[in-house]
Image (cartoon, rainbow, N blue to C red; front, side, top):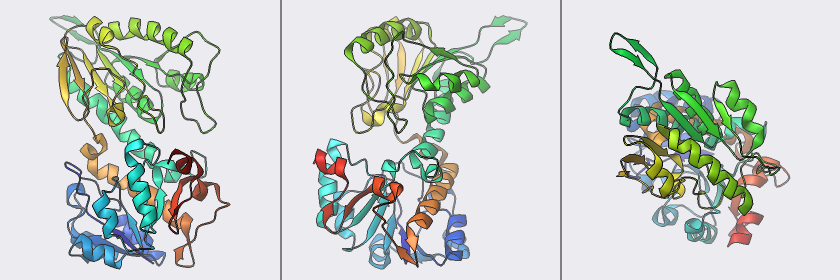
Length: 376
């Protein structure tokens, strides 16, 4: 079996799906790896380092696709890239197949008879933790969001005792206490900020408090956590109480970092324009949900804008800003997934296996994932 890793072509993308150390470990398991030339440049990995790990360097994406039985990517492919895949190829990629804009892509992959493994659909179970790319990349996004906020905020984060007087610490509010949110809490606390955090899932309160942040609660019997640990849609009554509570805390915050996502849906709007107006001039909102239109009503995905004196950062693909470690973490996820799927030197799809069943989207010319099939 030959695994191919093309160079990512999305603007600004510096990550690569496999690093040289991963190639070396896969080679020891009798998995051949081809890397498109210069694929690792953005992550500070040379072609010579890949060769030393046992990889074959292909001169172009076309040559790589022609040789590969399995293609691993870390960005959603274009329809043109799908057309270049050989029929019968296995594609391992974050696909987000439940999002409406990706439905034509799912159909194209099925028509091309490509077996598609959507790594964003891997179940959040104990066994699958080492394959969870959403968690590994969210860790980096949460960390980098705090650095962006600190750079944009015209104030210090920590409390300082100086000859010129005492500087009060910055107040940071984190919306969503998943992996990105928890990492943001930890990074903001390390920089000396006073941190509060909100989440619709009551179970995360203990995790928030263990990091030294205060948990913002909405009085309700409703718990919006799915069996898989994700957040789900809440009732209108809960949303109204939530908005009232958040309005008070957003107004007091110097920085708001929002991370709230609902799989397959538009990100919930948690920060209204009225809330933005209530913030002090110079405050900062970092919207990590910008990839799904944002948690702030004024977010412009891919841009940093100022409204009512508040900087709203809707930058995309933050993990690429820390490409070396982002690639390393993604590559380890891919190693574990490949070894889970491989048997006797080839991809073996066991429909009874929970992990395989959860992330297999297309196979043998058909859409096979029940939820994706229903959406189509």
